[in-house]
Image (cartoon, rainbow, N blue to C red; front, side):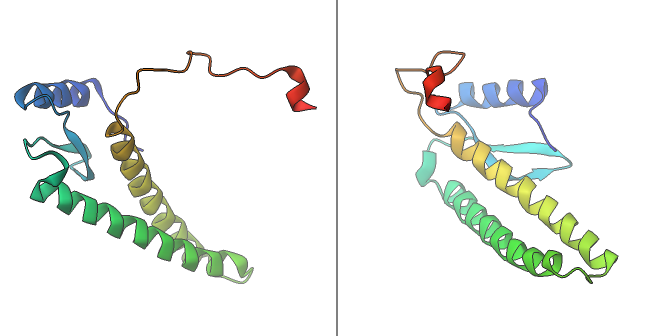
Length: 129
């Protein structure tokens, strides 16, 4: 699984400083295991940003197709080991892509003025009965 390293964060900040204040966008692909970012003055309307949107849609669509196939393989108790392993590998790839898409989308949500407390909301004990 790929997590942002300190180097990734510094590179991202450097890209944000180099543009008109728009934070760079995490792209839906990696190169040599390193995250790729897009920094553009065009924001979400730039050609590369739209290409990234299309790629994310393709990745999520492929994930849905792989999940459908996986359901068939995994519901058959006689599926060969090699087929189950291949299915697990493909599901892993699709999950990695979906997590990257989710992270990229989350990064583009504007921060609200109201933030939840660090510990999150609290509920009375009666809510769990």
